[in-house]
Length: 52
Image (cartoon, rainbow, N blue to C red):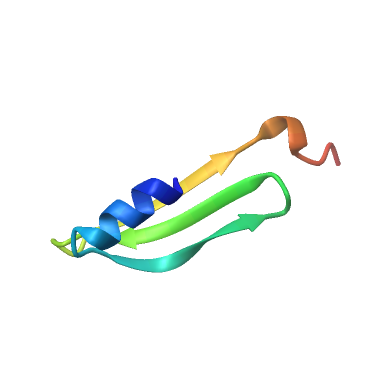
């Protein structure tokens, strides 16, 4: 995901949600591409998810 975010930024897009870890089992970021469309990426490791 980090490599993709860097490619978007290099191509002229912008990051509106810096890559970050959430609750120890998710990793996400948000980017806007040249036409203004906004994309969210989220990677989840379900084995690390709380069982509560």
